Image (cartoon, rainbow, N blue to C red; front, side):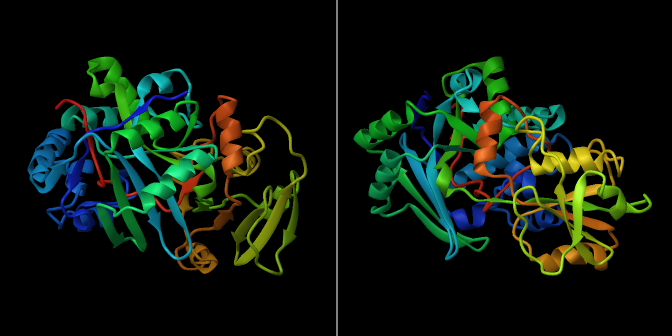
Length: 382
Protein backbone atom coordinates (compact mmCIF):
# COMPACT_ATOMS: atom_id res chain seq x y z
CA UNK A 1 0.00 0.00 0.00
CA UNK A 2 1.14 3.57 -0.60
CA UNK A 3 0.40 6.80 1.19
CA UNK A 4 -0.10 9.68 -1.20
CA UNK A 5 -0.98 13.23 -0.36
CA UNK A 6 -1.60 16.70 -1.70
CA UNK A 7 1.02 19.45 -1.54
CA UNK A 8 1.15 23.23 -1.90
CA UNK A 9 2.73 23.31 -5.34
CA UNK A 10 4.77 26.16 -6.70
CA UNK A 11 3.80 26.82 -10.34
CA UNK A 12 5.25 29.14 -13.00
CA UNK A 13 3.16 31.97 -14.37
CA UNK A 14 4.45 31.23 -17.87
CA UNK A 15 4.99 27.46 -18.15
CA UNK A 16 5.72 27.54 -21.87
CA UNK A 17 8.83 29.64 -21.25
CA UNK A 18 9.73 28.06 -17.93
CA UNK A 19 9.37 24.32 -18.51
CA UNK A 20 12.11 22.15 -20.01
CA UNK A 21 12.91 18.53 -20.66
CA UNK A 22 14.26 16.58 -17.65
CA UNK A 23 17.79 17.62 -16.71
CA UNK A 24 19.34 14.27 -17.63
CA UNK A 25 18.25 14.31 -21.30
CA UNK A 26 19.37 17.86 -22.10
CA UNK A 27 22.54 17.96 -24.17
CA UNK A 28 25.24 20.61 -23.86
CA UNK A 29 24.23 22.50 -27.00
CA UNK A 30 20.56 22.58 -26.02
CA UNK A 31 21.48 23.60 -22.47
CA UNK A 32 23.45 26.61 -23.71
CA UNK A 33 20.56 27.62 -25.94
CA UNK A 34 18.05 27.34 -23.09
CA UNK A 35 20.22 29.52 -20.86
CA UNK A 36 19.59 32.43 -23.22
CA UNK A 37 16.04 32.45 -21.80
CA UNK A 38 16.30 34.07 -18.38
CA UNK A 39 12.84 32.72 -17.46
CA UNK A 40 13.75 29.06 -18.03
CA UNK A 41 13.91 26.39 -15.34
CA UNK A 42 17.28 25.39 -16.82
CA UNK A 43 18.92 27.91 -14.48
CA UNK A 44 17.62 25.90 -11.52
CA UNK A 45 17.95 22.31 -12.71
CA UNK A 46 21.28 22.71 -14.57
CA UNK A 47 22.94 25.76 -13.02
CA UNK A 48 26.14 27.22 -14.39
CA UNK A 49 29.23 25.68 -12.83
CA UNK A 50 31.16 28.90 -12.24
CA UNK A 51 31.85 28.79 -8.50
CA UNK A 52 29.43 26.68 -6.44
CA UNK A 53 26.84 25.38 -8.89
CA UNK A 54 24.45 24.36 -6.11
CA UNK A 55 24.56 27.84 -4.63
CA UNK A 56 23.92 29.11 -8.17
CA UNK A 57 20.84 26.86 -8.33
CA UNK A 58 19.57 28.21 -5.01
CA UNK A 59 20.09 31.81 -6.09
CA UNK A 60 18.34 31.26 -9.43
CA UNK A 61 15.43 29.53 -7.69
CA UNK A 62 14.98 32.53 -5.43
CA UNK A 63 15.04 34.83 -8.47
CA UNK A 64 12.55 32.78 -10.50
CA UNK A 65 10.13 32.34 -7.60
CA UNK A 66 9.00 35.89 -8.30
CA UNK A 67 7.38 34.57 -11.47
CA UNK A 68 5.65 31.66 -9.74
CA UNK A 69 2.43 31.20 -7.81
CA UNK A 70 1.87 29.16 -4.64
CA UNK A 71 -1.17 26.88 -4.74
CA UNK A 72 -3.29 25.70 -1.86
CA UNK A 73 -2.62 22.00 -1.02
CA UNK A 74 -3.49 20.19 -4.24
CA UNK A 75 -3.02 17.13 -6.41
CA UNK A 76 -2.49 17.63 -10.14
CA UNK A 77 -3.50 15.72 -13.25
CA UNK A 78 -1.03 16.04 -16.12
CA UNK A 79 -1.84 15.06 -19.70
CA UNK A 80 0.75 15.11 -22.47
CA UNK A 81 -0.09 14.16 -26.02
CA UNK A 82 -0.41 14.73 -29.75
CA UNK A 83 -2.39 13.13 -32.57
CA UNK A 84 -0.40 9.89 -32.29
CA UNK A 85 -0.13 9.25 -28.55
CA UNK A 86 -1.11 10.70 -25.18
CA UNK A 87 -0.34 9.83 -21.59
CA UNK A 88 -1.80 11.11 -18.34
CA UNK A 89 -1.13 10.69 -14.68
CA UNK A 90 -1.37 12.29 -11.28
CA UNK A 91 1.34 14.54 -9.87
CA UNK A 92 1.23 14.08 -6.10
CA UNK A 93 3.45 13.30 -3.15
CA UNK A 94 4.13 9.79 -1.93
CA UNK A 95 5.67 8.66 1.35
CA UNK A 96 9.36 7.77 1.20
CA UNK A 97 8.61 5.20 3.88
CA UNK A 98 6.79 3.25 1.16
CA UNK A 99 9.93 3.44 -0.99
CA UNK A 100 11.95 2.14 1.97
CA UNK A 101 9.48 -0.70 2.52
CA UNK A 102 9.40 -1.77 -1.13
CA UNK A 103 5.90 -0.61 -2.07
CA UNK A 104 7.54 1.63 -4.64
CA UNK A 105 9.53 -0.84 -6.69
CA UNK A 106 12.75 -0.11 -8.55
CA UNK A 107 14.49 -1.89 -11.42
CA UNK A 108 17.77 0.02 -11.64
CA UNK A 109 20.86 0.55 -9.50
CA UNK A 110 21.87 4.10 -8.65
CA UNK A 111 25.40 5.39 -9.16
CA UNK A 112 27.17 7.38 -6.50
CA UNK A 113 28.18 10.43 -8.52
CA UNK A 114 24.75 11.33 -9.96
CA UNK A 115 23.12 10.39 -6.65
CA UNK A 116 25.32 12.82 -4.70
CA UNK A 117 24.66 15.49 -7.32
CA UNK A 118 20.89 15.21 -6.80
CA UNK A 119 21.24 15.16 -2.99
CA UNK A 120 23.29 18.36 -3.08
CA UNK A 121 20.76 19.93 -5.43
CA UNK A 122 17.88 19.18 -3.03
CA UNK A 123 19.94 20.48 -0.11
CA UNK A 124 20.51 23.75 -1.98
CA UNK A 125 17.04 24.51 -3.35
CA UNK A 126 15.02 22.73 -0.64
CA UNK A 127 12.63 21.43 -3.28
CA UNK A 128 11.82 18.56 -5.60
CA UNK A 129 12.08 20.11 -9.03
CA UNK A 130 11.84 17.01 -11.24
CA UNK A 131 9.20 14.32 -11.45
CA UNK A 132 9.85 10.73 -10.43
CA UNK A 133 7.93 8.81 -13.10
CA UNK A 134 6.00 5.86 -11.67
CA UNK A 135 3.21 3.63 -12.91
CA UNK A 136 0.64 1.24 -11.50
CA UNK A 137 -1.35 -1.73 -12.78
CA UNK A 138 -4.37 -0.59 -14.78
CA UNK A 139 -7.16 0.47 -12.41
CA UNK A 140 -10.66 1.35 -13.62
CA UNK A 141 -11.42 3.44 -10.53
CA UNK A 142 -8.39 5.65 -11.17
CA UNK A 143 -9.39 6.09 -14.81
CA UNK A 144 -12.92 7.04 -13.78
CA UNK A 145 -11.58 9.79 -11.51
CA UNK A 146 -9.31 11.03 -14.30
CA UNK A 147 -12.22 11.26 -16.72
CA UNK A 148 -14.18 13.36 -14.23
CA UNK A 149 -11.27 15.77 -13.76
CA UNK A 150 -10.65 16.10 -17.51
CA UNK A 151 -14.11 17.66 -17.89
CA UNK A 152 -12.91 20.70 -15.93
CA UNK A 153 -10.80 23.56 -17.28
CA UNK A 154 -7.03 23.04 -16.93
CA UNK A 155 -4.79 25.62 -15.28
CA UNK A 156 -2.17 25.05 -18.01
CA UNK A 157 -2.76 24.29 -21.68
CA UNK A 158 0.16 24.89 -24.08
CA UNK A 159 2.31 23.20 -26.72
CA UNK A 160 6.00 22.43 -26.41
CA UNK A 161 8.38 19.85 -27.91
CA UNK A 162 5.65 18.77 -30.37
CA UNK A 163 3.22 17.84 -27.59
CA UNK A 164 0.25 19.50 -25.95
CA UNK A 165 0.64 19.82 -22.19
CA UNK A 166 -2.37 20.22 -19.91
CA UNK A 167 -2.41 20.46 -16.12
CA UNK A 168 -5.47 20.31 -13.84
CA UNK A 169 -5.28 21.44 -10.22
CA UNK A 170 -7.35 19.37 -7.77
CA UNK A 171 -7.91 21.14 -4.48
CA UNK A 172 -11.40 19.85 -3.63
CA UNK A 173 -11.00 17.88 -0.39
CA UNK A 174 -13.52 15.20 -1.31
CA UNK A 175 -11.81 14.52 -4.63
CA UNK A 176 -8.41 14.43 -2.94
CA UNK A 177 -9.70 11.82 -0.49
CA UNK A 178 -11.02 9.72 -3.37
CA UNK A 179 -7.60 9.79 -5.01
CA UNK A 180 -5.90 8.82 -1.76
CA UNK A 181 -8.29 5.90 -1.32
CA UNK A 182 -7.73 4.43 -4.79
CA UNK A 183 -3.94 4.70 -4.45
CA UNK A 184 -3.80 3.24 -0.93
CA UNK A 185 -3.93 -0.50 -1.85
CA UNK A 186 -1.56 -0.16 -4.79
CA UNK A 187 2.12 -0.62 -5.21
CA UNK A 188 4.00 1.55 -7.68
CA UNK A 189 6.81 0.84 -10.14
CA UNK A 190 9.51 3.38 -10.95
CA UNK A 191 9.73 4.00 -14.67
CA UNK A 192 12.27 6.82 -14.68
CA UNK A 193 13.88 8.85 -11.91
CA UNK A 194 15.71 6.31 -9.74
CA UNK A 195 18.36 8.86 -8.75
CA UNK A 196 15.76 11.52 -7.98
CA UNK A 197 13.81 9.31 -5.57
CA UNK A 198 16.97 7.84 -4.00
CA UNK A 199 18.31 11.35 -3.42
CA UNK A 200 15.01 12.39 -1.82
CA UNK A 201 15.19 9.34 0.43
CA UNK A 202 18.75 10.16 1.51
CA UNK A 203 17.78 13.77 2.16
CA UNK A 204 14.88 12.65 4.36
CA UNK A 205 17.15 10.36 6.36
CA UNK A 206 19.62 13.18 6.86
CA UNK A 207 17.31 16.11 7.58
CA UNK A 208 13.84 14.70 8.37
CA UNK A 209 11.12 17.39 8.40
CA UNK A 210 7.44 16.93 7.59
CA UNK A 211 7.58 17.64 3.85
CA UNK A 212 10.92 15.83 3.51
CA UNK A 213 9.08 12.59 4.31
CA UNK A 214 7.49 12.78 0.86
CA UNK A 215 8.67 12.96 -2.73
CA UNK A 216 6.85 14.41 -5.73
CA UNK A 217 5.95 11.82 -8.37
CA UNK A 218 4.02 11.41 -11.58
CA UNK A 219 1.99 8.21 -11.55
CA UNK A 220 0.28 6.73 -14.61
CA UNK A 221 -1.50 3.55 -15.61
CA UNK A 222 0.72 0.86 -17.11
CA UNK A 223 -1.38 0.85 -20.30
CA UNK A 224 -0.74 4.55 -20.91
CA UNK A 225 3.05 4.38 -21.11
CA UNK A 226 5.20 3.97 -24.21
CA UNK A 227 8.70 2.50 -24.12
CA UNK A 228 10.93 2.96 -27.16
CA UNK A 229 14.11 1.04 -27.98
CA UNK A 230 17.37 2.20 -26.45
CA UNK A 231 19.90 1.38 -29.15
CA UNK A 232 23.69 1.01 -29.12
CA UNK A 233 26.21 2.60 -31.49
CA UNK A 234 29.69 1.07 -31.67
CA UNK A 235 32.41 3.47 -32.75
CA UNK A 236 35.06 0.92 -33.79
CA UNK A 237 35.00 -2.83 -34.35
CA UNK A 238 38.60 -4.01 -34.44
CA UNK A 239 37.89 -7.76 -34.43
CA UNK A 240 38.19 -9.87 -37.54
CA UNK A 241 35.21 -11.70 -39.02
CA UNK A 242 32.71 -9.94 -36.73
CA UNK A 243 29.63 -11.40 -38.43
CA UNK A 244 31.14 -14.90 -38.41
CA UNK A 245 31.90 -14.63 -34.70
CA UNK A 246 28.26 -13.85 -34.00
CA UNK A 247 27.28 -17.25 -35.40
CA UNK A 248 28.60 -19.03 -32.32
CA UNK A 249 25.63 -17.88 -30.22
CA UNK A 250 23.18 -16.54 -32.81
CA UNK A 251 21.31 -17.50 -35.93
CA UNK A 252 22.48 -14.88 -38.42
CA UNK A 253 20.94 -13.73 -41.69
CA UNK A 254 21.16 -10.73 -43.96
CA UNK A 255 17.92 -8.74 -44.02
CA UNK A 256 16.22 -8.40 -47.40
CA UNK A 257 13.36 -6.32 -46.03
CA UNK A 258 13.70 -3.88 -43.15
CA UNK A 259 11.08 -4.41 -40.45
CA UNK A 260 10.98 -3.52 -36.77
CA UNK A 261 12.57 -6.27 -34.65
CA UNK A 262 10.49 -8.69 -32.62
CA UNK A 263 11.37 -9.71 -29.09
CA UNK A 264 14.67 -11.64 -29.02
CA UNK A 265 15.46 -10.43 -32.53
CA UNK A 266 18.51 -8.15 -32.67
CA UNK A 267 19.32 -6.11 -35.75
CA UNK A 268 22.80 -4.84 -36.59
CA UNK A 269 23.77 -2.30 -39.22
CA UNK A 270 27.35 -3.05 -40.23
CA UNK A 271 29.24 -2.27 -43.44
CA UNK A 272 26.11 -0.79 -45.01
CA UNK A 273 24.09 -3.96 -44.48
CA UNK A 274 21.35 -4.82 -42.00
CA UNK A 275 21.72 -8.18 -40.27
CA UNK A 276 19.16 -10.03 -38.17
CA UNK A 277 20.45 -12.21 -35.36
CA UNK A 278 18.49 -14.39 -32.93
CA UNK A 279 19.97 -16.16 -29.89
CA UNK A 280 20.33 -19.93 -30.20
CA UNK A 281 19.68 -20.42 -26.48
CA UNK A 282 17.53 -18.40 -24.08
CA UNK A 283 18.52 -19.20 -20.55
CA UNK A 284 18.89 -17.62 -17.14
CA UNK A 285 16.65 -15.41 -15.03
CA UNK A 286 14.38 -12.63 -16.26
CA UNK A 287 17.25 -10.12 -16.43
CA UNK A 288 19.55 -12.46 -18.33
CA UNK A 289 16.80 -13.11 -20.90
CA UNK A 290 16.34 -9.42 -21.70
CA UNK A 291 17.55 -8.44 -25.17
CA UNK A 292 19.78 -5.74 -23.68
CA UNK A 293 21.41 -8.40 -21.49
CA UNK A 294 21.85 -10.78 -24.42
CA UNK A 295 23.62 -8.03 -26.35
CA UNK A 296 25.86 -7.27 -23.38
CA UNK A 297 26.66 -10.85 -22.45
CA UNK A 298 26.99 -12.34 -25.94
CA UNK A 299 28.31 -9.47 -28.07
CA UNK A 300 29.60 -6.39 -26.28
CA UNK A 301 31.73 -8.02 -23.62
CA UNK A 302 33.02 -11.29 -25.17
CA UNK A 303 33.50 -10.06 -28.75
CA UNK A 304 34.03 -6.30 -28.51
CA UNK A 305 35.60 -6.12 -25.04
CA UNK A 306 33.06 -3.60 -23.73
CA UNK A 307 32.47 -4.53 -20.10
CA UNK A 308 31.28 -1.25 -18.60
CA UNK A 309 28.96 0.45 -21.07
CA UNK A 310 28.76 3.59 -18.91
CA UNK A 311 32.50 4.26 -19.06
CA UNK A 312 33.75 2.63 -22.25
CA UNK A 313 34.39 5.33 -24.89
CA UNK A 314 33.74 2.90 -27.75
CA UNK A 315 29.96 2.87 -27.26
CA UNK A 316 27.14 5.38 -26.97
CA UNK A 317 23.38 5.13 -26.79
CA UNK A 318 20.52 6.53 -28.83
CA UNK A 319 16.94 6.46 -27.59
CA UNK A 320 13.70 7.99 -28.74
CA UNK A 321 11.92 8.39 -32.04
CA UNK A 322 14.36 8.20 -34.96
CA UNK A 323 13.94 6.96 -38.50
CA UNK A 324 15.97 3.99 -39.67
CA UNK A 325 17.84 6.23 -42.13
CA UNK A 326 19.13 8.35 -39.25
CA UNK A 327 20.59 5.24 -37.63
CA UNK A 328 22.28 4.28 -40.90
CA UNK A 329 23.88 7.73 -41.00
CA UNK A 330 25.68 7.01 -37.73
CA UNK A 331 27.70 4.51 -39.76
CA UNK A 332 27.58 5.86 -43.32
CA UNK A 333 28.25 9.53 -42.57
CA UNK A 334 29.43 9.91 -38.97
CA UNK A 335 32.31 7.44 -38.92
CA UNK A 336 30.98 4.79 -36.55
CA UNK A 337 31.21 1.07 -37.33
CA UNK A 338 27.89 -0.42 -36.25
CA UNK A 339 24.42 0.17 -34.85
CA UNK A 340 22.74 -2.42 -32.64
CA UNK A 341 19.00 -1.95 -32.98
CA UNK A 342 16.69 -3.58 -30.42
CA UNK A 343 13.10 -4.43 -29.70
CA UNK A 344 12.04 -2.21 -26.78
CA UNK A 345 11.93 -3.63 -23.28
CA UNK A 346 8.28 -4.12 -22.34
CA UNK A 347 6.32 -2.90 -19.33
CA UNK A 348 5.73 -6.56 -18.43
CA UNK A 349 9.46 -7.28 -18.41
CA UNK A 350 10.12 -4.22 -16.28
CA UNK A 351 7.50 -5.29 -13.73
CA UNK A 352 8.86 -8.85 -13.67
CA UNK A 353 12.37 -7.56 -12.95
CA UNK A 354 11.14 -5.17 -10.24
CA UNK A 355 8.94 -7.83 -8.62
CA UNK A 356 11.97 -10.14 -8.47
CA UNK A 357 13.98 -7.32 -6.80
CA UNK A 358 16.54 -7.44 -9.59
CA UNK A 359 18.16 -4.69 -11.67
CA UNK A 360 18.17 -4.16 -15.41
CA UNK A 361 21.40 -3.43 -17.28
CA UNK A 362 22.18 0.26 -17.94
CA UNK A 363 20.24 1.94 -20.76
CA UNK A 364 17.49 -0.67 -20.91
CA UNK A 365 14.46 1.59 -21.38
CA UNK A 366 13.62 4.88 -23.07
CA UNK A 367 10.27 6.22 -21.93
CA UNK A 368 8.68 8.59 -24.41
CA UNK A 369 7.53 11.30 -24.53
CA UNK A 370 9.53 12.70 -21.61
CA UNK A 371 7.64 14.49 -18.86
CA UNK A 372 8.16 18.23 -18.63
CA UNK A 373 10.16 19.61 -15.74
CA UNK A 374 8.82 22.79 -14.16
CA UNK A 375 5.06 22.34 -14.29
CA UNK A 376 5.05 22.35 -10.50
CA UNK A 377 7.66 22.14 -7.73
CA UNK A 378 7.32 20.56 -4.30
CA UNK A 379 9.11 22.71 -1.72
CA UNK A 380 10.41 21.01 1.40
CA UNK A 381 11.28 23.57 4.07
CA UNK A 382 8.82 26.45 3.77
